[in-house]
Length: 246
Image (cartoon, rainbow, N blue to C red; front, side, top):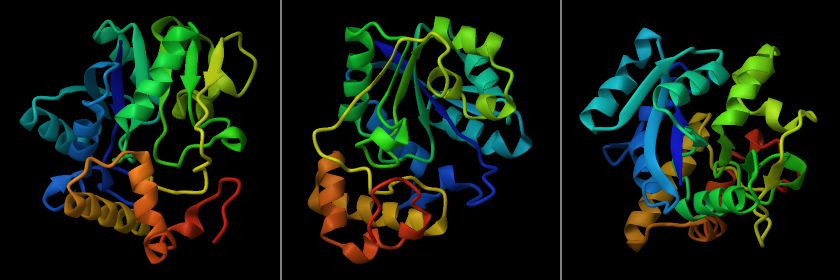
């Protein structure tokens, strides 16, 4: 089992307040948490936000929904994760980001099970990008507290610290790592929320899932996009991964 730590902040420069933007009156962060809760390998969920005043909104959201919340550094996100893990005495940590409201519990379970079965220090499904077969927005990373502590102590690159897990996989730092590969290549799809057009895509998908009365796993989401090419096209200019075809 593992604990999901979802990093979230209101101060996005590209789409401020995006994590609490609403679809049918429900904040995106609530959609994500409800979906993550369905993962069989997740024992608990913590939202890791910042000490900035604007993120009082996230703390209030967590308090209202009885969700554990931690506040830490805004820019040194590696330190935020480390201090959060220390405070809650975590052993295995699943890193998720709040700009991925369509998180799939089956994908989460797949990455966590790979991590546990192969006794890895770090498991992931979307990096390196050139070998990823998952959509942007279904990202899952899992690592041990020991690996996190080593990265926290030894990593000095501010860019690496802001992106938390670069130290695990970008260089050879002695970690045992693994990447989950999907049987279909969905790497050309963008389902994260960084821009207004991204939100339009996600809004459409959640409404379609509600109309169809289904939960909406990854294959369902892709099917919805394929049936609505004008929706898939809305945020295509922001996709920088390999294999993208407009």
